[in-house]
Length: 416
Image 1 (cartoon, rainbow, N blue to C red):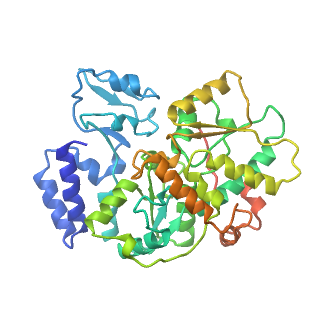
Image 2 (spheres, one colour):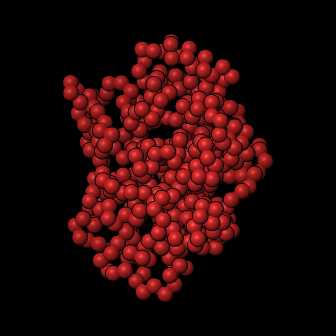
Image 3 (cartoon, rainbow, N blue to C red):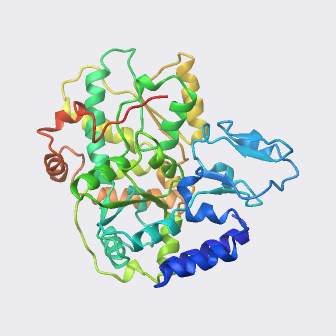
């Protein structure tokens, strides 16, 4: 992001937090009306997740075109580049590699703060499992819950609890549909880069279980339990912003903040989570928390499968890919007929969600923080987690097996 745009972003955040937010934001708009990128910060949903904030300044204007793994960046007429939103999966690698700060990723913070000023229903933060340690080495999730309440949220929900539910759903789906040596599943439902890659670039949707991501499951659940609620997902991923806007998923999550945006919010409001009391609530299993790092999804589903179907004759044979390039290579092997597994986990970021482009901690440190939190979990898998059973009961499921029969809350229509 250019210095000009960064300065405007900071001005808008301060204005949105002020008592006279409408007036102060209007003054900035009037003053900067000739700067079109301003509207991308005020109305992010009107624009693609990755967008250009000016002309390409690189001497080698084909570098981004060559480096985009999904051929979403193309030469523009008259020089420069353009981004095709239909091919872009939101991995954010282009913005990380743009030395001139011309390629930008969407930010929802200003729009969320302005919406909160006029919202009349409850407001819930939905935090990704990868958040452990991201807001401070000693900050617990209980303290983060207190921090959100101080900022005007009515509550904070750990999305790892919904990873538990989706783990159970995917284990049941695998047990039902992978019955021969020729059958296989492509998953993980939590990674929008992996799912978008398959939807937009490959003819393999029939092998993708019809589960929504834990983020969408959490948003839909909060909307059902608390009508009129605003839901705000917080994670390390740019692609989650795109996922929240997809036609068959839109409405579950109103805003998506990255860890860096949350860090900004704490800084602008002088909120120190480490100094706040611990406010505990629901608990996810170690399996659900493990969705945050590469390999954690397949580990969770395999461990759960062994408990829901202990006499299963055909075992799970899993293979995983770490990072977008590795995901493409693994799919290439599958398309070439070199199938060595029946469960393929793809994570678009190296290291998994802890390696997301908008993380705060280095990948290895983030992974260790999450592993530590998972080790402290009271329950190993969702099978033992009473919160999963209780939540399913509140949502109207007679038993856990009905998770693969319902077609609404935790299921999406995977169409190309």
